[in-house]
Amino acid sequence: MPPSPAAPVRVLFLCLGNICRSPMAEGVFRHAVERVGLADAIAIDSAGCGPWHIGSPPDQRAQAAARKRGYDLSKQRARQIEAHDLDGFDFVLAMDRSNLTRIESLGTGRAECRLFLEFADGANADEVPDPYYGGGDGFEYALDLIEAASDGLLTHIRKTRLQD
Ligand code: 4NP
Image (cartoon, rainbow, N blue to C red; front, side, top):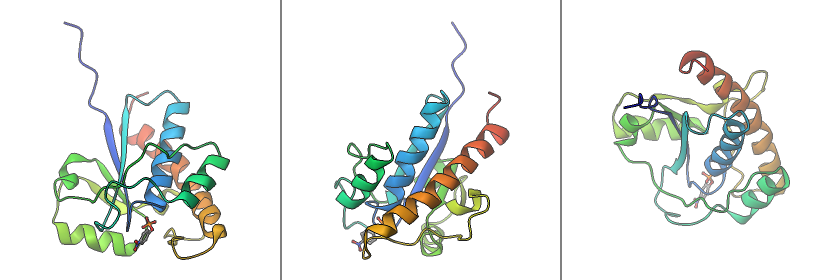
C-alpha cells in the first residue's frame, strides 16, 4: 500500500457571529493556501461564538468586499464553535479578545488558541474590529488586516508544521 499522506494541519477561524470576519478570514486564507498548492495539507474552517446565524451564508457586505478582491465566500455557512473543536483543530484563531474569552469558557484541548492578528507583521492592531454594525469601510479595513495575518500564518505553518 502506498504511504498515506500526513494528516492536514487544521485551522479554525473564530468571530462572534461567523457571518463577517471569520468567513472573510476563511476565504482569504483558503485562497492563499490554494495558490501555493497546499490545499491538501491545510484544512480550513470558521465558526462563531454565538448561535444567531447558524446555517446562514456570510453577510452580503462581507461577500461583496471579498469578491472585489477575488475571494468567493458564497458557499460558506455559519456554525457555532463546540468544545470538541478545541481538540479537532491545531489552531483556533480568534478575531478579538472576547472570542478568546469564549474559547476559555469551553474548556481546553490540544489546539493552539491565539489572536489571528499575532501573525500580521507590522499591523498596528491586534484585534479585527467587528464591521457588522458599521459602514462599508469596516469590511475593507478588516480585509486589509486579515490579508496581512493570512500571509504570516501561512509562513508560520510552513515553517513549524510542514516540510514542504
Ligand atoms: P462577526 O460579526 O462576528 O464578524 O460575524 C457579527 C455578526 C453578527 C452579530 C455580531 C457580530 N450579531 O450580533 O448578530
